[in-house]
Image (tube, rainbow, N blue to C red; front, side, top):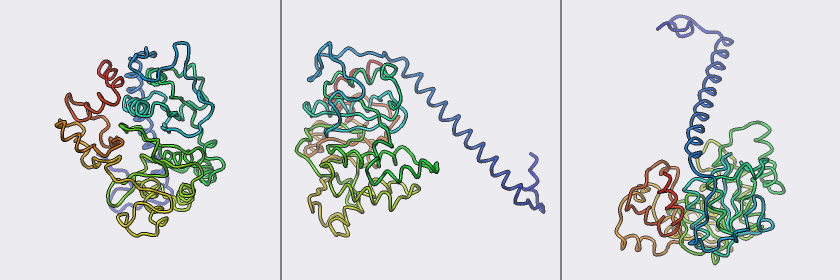
Length: 356
């Protein structure tokens, strides 16, 4: 293979040539990344097109709307006003089976609580074009609504507004997890309520928990579950830290690490083990929402004795499935996760077995 001149011994490449080569390489890398993303998106959409667009609501759903009643996209309950929030910060408008399970389990455990699913992909789209399998199924719950997620509108009148305008204007790198970290803070600041990641399975009613977070380990607080009253000072401090200490390149810096460092300052402690409640903010023990460590995520796909499961989850409100690790892992019959799905999101479980 013939080497380019600037790689041959004794040949010095000038700055202009090097800049042109670097620019060409960057352009090629971006093109390959774009093709890869588009190819995978087409594959995924192709699979989803095989699903029906409408689901007949089963009688087993406890709070099913009347046959003539439909859940409109954009505010079935007259605005937000608290409740439980889920987010989809990407352009995706087709809820995954995992997201369907999370919402179903939350709706069954909290039958009188409004559940709002905010989707970036709904912004600017006509609702009639967005009817799909997941939206149709989750609309079977009268407490569930879908609303557009407009970042500018959400961040307006919060400390995050200037940050978002800056990164959007300068085209800085901002990934979906970072946007999600910002969105959940703005949501809780404006409306209060409960925020949940879409890789949760909820067992119990969450109405009696407020101004609380969950401990992931001895050293860090996780933000996959958060619940706060509107305009809570702690959330305001978190938003200001998000902006003042913003660092895109450090993984978790805007999420779990942010909550951890702010809580330590809030309570004037050096270690999380020193205090789990102060100045009106609580950190729940890890078994409340994270009984299985992220390093042990494979346990969800293993067979577990009933007694062991009951012991593990006796103090849990729900479990976090660590989607970043577990996504794409096929569900095994008789596994711990299958038992959870059969019990807490039974309709999603049945639909998944029917179509996957």
